[in-house]
Each structure stands twice: as structure tokens, then as C-alpha cells.
Amino acid sequence: MNINYKLSSRQLLLIGVLFSLLLTSCERKPDTDRLDIQLIEILTIGEDDPESPNEYLFEYISTIALDSRGYIYVGEHDKTTVRVYDPEGNYTYSIGGKGRGPGEFEEVTAIHIDRHDRLVVVDRTNARLTLFMLDGELIDIRTIPDLTFTRTILELDDDSFLFLYASGDPNYLVHAADSSLREIQSSFVSFDEVRHTDTIFEELFARFNPGLITPLTQSDILYVPYLYGGILHRYSKNDEGEWKHSGTVRGFAERDIPLREVDRGSGVRADGIIGTPEGMVAAIFYQRSQGLFTLSDGSVVHFTAVRNNEENIFRVELFDRNLTFIGFSDIEDSGGERIRVLWKDDDDNFYIADGRDYPKLVKSRLELGDS
Image 1 (cartoon, rainbow, N blue to C red):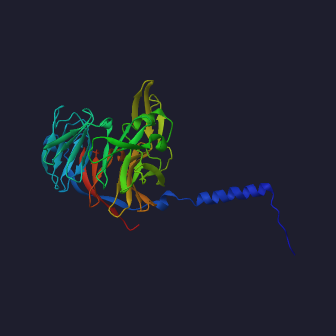
Image 2 (tube, rainbow, N blue to C red):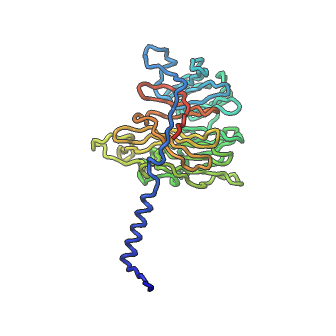
């Protein structure tokens, strides 16, 4: 006996809904991606005793770099010198001083040590780059328009440089310069490619916190906005030497929109406030990028601060060398917004500006558990 079943349109719709729910239930859940990762402290530079020598008292560490000897160079926001510490954390000397003359700074916003062991210092107020020998001897002063808000300098294997800052119209975030460091040759990562909202707050905030970059190969980099919605962006250099958006990488974030504008009179604690011609604009941040690095085996780690009620979890995401998301681990339950990973050395040790309790620089390594 043959029986033919004919489903009504209503039954077909119900099956479709049930199938959709089944797929949704099979999607990745946060707990299935959880790893057991810890940061193991190796060295701490900084003191909480106000009577300690000034060389070990920090206010806000904004930029660091390491030379080929393992010496650590530290710049602070609104400070006018670069402090130098040996690999054991002992203060050795300072470079620079307050002023507008040769070798002086009004504000150190970014530092970098290139493969030729030259110290490059970006001075936002004086709008220039200053190059030093590692002992502090002045080499040269370079002026490049619009470099004043540079946050990161990345050197590629061909001796070219990438500067991370927001400037121009359209609002590009990454700018390429040759080894002479005398002019910008091209700009890419349009803000419109990576923005999450059409809010004026996000647009203006990117000028002060443009995001993070890390090299993947000689002709590929990974970019992530400071306000993180779970998407990282890959950019590649083509045969004509042009940098183009070449794909996205999915990480983990509870929210696709990482910020929300709030009324300053609402009683909600805002994470950022920016002045506009129309008045002050405030927002709360749900997820922030706190560090992005490529490890020696080609895998990528991304440190984030994730809002959890009134606290910020400090989290790390791990991607394999093919940029496939492996998982994440919560390292600290609170204070994540005050933990910024600023540097990684050749041995995959991380150098962290930790503003919890008191400002300090912490050298740490990642340790992955059995899970």
C-alpha cells in the first residue's frame, strides 16, 4: 500500500522554523570555546610607595619598545622623557627632556626601535619624529604632516613602516611610509570599512584610539578597532604595492555593537566623553581591544576588556596561524580596562601596562592549560 503525504504550506513553515531553531541551538556557545590560559608574571617595574625614586613611579604608561639587548624603553602620556631599563628592570638612563629644541619633547605619544637600533619618538605637540641612537645621541628630526596622533609604529621586513592614527577625509587609520621616514606614501583602513555605528561619538573617538595592528606576513596585516564587535580585518598588499581589505576574521564578542551612547544626566557611568560643537557626547563601552600580537608560531592573540555590569573582564582570544578562532579565556574578573598589552618580544613575552592598584609595567608569558 502506497501512502502519499502532502504537506500544507503551514506545515512546511513550521518545519522551517523548527529547523532554524535546531541550527541556532547548534551554534557555538561561549563555554564550548573556553580555554584555560593564564598570564604568568616574570618581572615588574614600578613602585606604589610615593617615597620611591621617581624613576620607578609611573602615572600612565602609554608606549614601550625593546632593543636588541632586551633593554626596555618606556614613554608616558604627558611626559617629556623616555626612561630606559635593563632586562632585569633596573633604571639606567633617560632620553629627551621638556622643550622644543633638538632632542626635546613636549609629549611622547609613541616610540619604536627599528631593526637598525634607532629609537624613533613621536612628539604630538611638536608634530615631529625624532631619531636617536640607543644611548640618546640625536640622529635627526623628521616632520611628517598629520603624524601628531600616532599611537603605534609597525616596521615591516622591507624596512618600510606603518603608522596607526586617524587623519584626513576620508578618515584613514593606517599610513605607510618608506625607510626614510620622510613622507606618507599611501593610506588605508578607511574608518567607514570598520565602524560599527553612525554615531558621532565613535567617529571622533577613533581619532584618539584608532585601534591595533599586527603583521601576519610581509604583505599582510591584521587590524582591529579599539571598540571591538567581534570582527578583525585583514589587509593585504597587492603586486602594485597597494594595501586592500582582503577579508574579515571572526572572534568572540557578546555584542556586535560594542558601544552605546548615553545621556550624561542619566546616572550611567560613561566610559568616554567627547566634546562636539553641539555639546558633550558620552558612551559606555561593552568590548575594547587591549592588545593584538602575532606569536612566533604564526598564531594570533587578542586581548580585550569586556564589560560585565560595572566591572571589565580582562580576556584573551586565540587564533591559529590560519586565523581560525580557537577559543578565549578570562584572565582577570575586573579591572580589564586598566590592563593594556603594549609589546611582545621575540620570546613571546608580553609587556603590560597595568594600572590596577598602582601604575606599573609587568613582563608576563601566556601559559595554556590542558583544557
